[in-house]
Length: 396
Picture: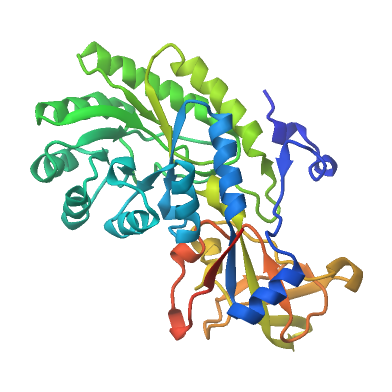
């Protein structure tokens, strides 16, 4: 069966109501005002866009509890409005827990999803009051039993997905054959085994990929019941996609409709608690980077532009997240487009943002906008070469 994405031809993508593309959250006029006040580079996060995405997920998946994955972007400009809107939060470290506490989240509204925690990570989060933890191996059970004996455990399963950009089961997740023995080991250790989780992978473009993962989870769920382990929580993870350069994706409401159908088919007969861990799907398109042209040269007949952010900064998502961002210049079509290279500000020659985007003839000091910069950008940025990270600014 073809998906909406597969059955929508290229000429229809921009106009299809089921497809969304990358758009900035600020205009160039607004960007100039912000750059004058805060400098450049600046990441602008729209509070209303955060709430919009959260509400679309809640409305599209009624009855599913949302635990925002702080790893995608732990900025207060995202965490605070989500907390105010009633979201819970998924943390993987003590640092993310502290950011969540600062935003107003209570420990009882947190789920710790790192399957292999350091002792320090585990004990500090436990001491703060977190009581829900994920595991995927026998040694983690021993660790949890010693340092968090009354914790509630969720077993993470390894699953596959054909349309995800990153396979998040390549490193974590128990294989189906090992799942019930791991559940039994946790119970024998006196732990509260409460549920199962999985993650179909980052930037999962086809919601249909959730169904085989859900069917696998149901097989394990039923096998656990046969040995006397009654589970009550199903965590379907994240994977909700965002629009990038040359990567049109389904709107969140249409995407959620497909996932809701798969949930109904596989677990609709059970009165269980279902949660999800959206990260990118909540925050990616809520942020736009304002960056400036620092330098310009012609090398072997090709125009090069140096901008004030790069692969070591906000564009780190191109390295670790395997996505490409659209770079937008003001009145680009009217000015005429040409091939160029755009590179970051460090002295590393590999710090090249793009080699194949068409841009007009840019002036030194000109501002550019880069949308869909809210997920896995500033979160994985560094201060290599002693350069400052992009300032993060919130707008309504």
